[in-house]
Length: 209
Ligand SMILES: [Mg+2]
Ligand SMILES: [Zn+2]
Image 1 (cartoon, rainbow, N blue to C red):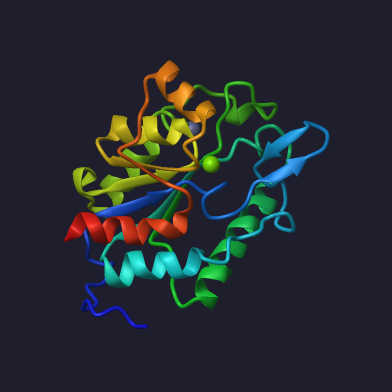
Image 2 (cartoon, rainbow, N blue to C red):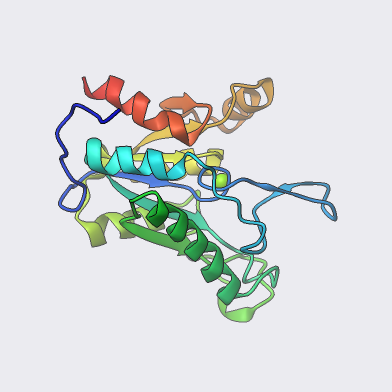
């Protein structure tokens, strides 16, 4: 079914949905060496969730938000993968969106890490989440009103970064005891919680009306 709402279009909008990448647009990967789930280290491991294009299309065409990726990618600095491989992962996401008839309005990555192996990335920067640097840069470069924007992420660092930038925040995940304990311990609480990125358009429709 086509949405009844008229297309408002994202390109000239001053509000954005900022999205974290790993765990929101693509699945996390079980890493045997580490014994836990991590961000993918290769394009081959990058599995874009099947609902992502539909959700991005609704956010842009129906609800009139720009959609901008905000992601920490310290893997290059730790030699877990190359810059070229990171670009391949990101191209794969872009390709999936194009197949679904939509696109991102921007992508911002922090490549730094205080414990980087590659020297040029070994800095304490102002863009690594939970710092707000990437959001502030994205807002300045795209003419965005942060108060009208939302940050969607699956980590409390995303909630923290969004809050520091003055956005509203949406945490992707399940209200487990683990996450509620962590919220309390870190004193970081999102404005909204959804179980998956695909639920974000429906949430925003209810706030909009
Ligand atoms: Mg994440
Ligand atoms: Zn950085």
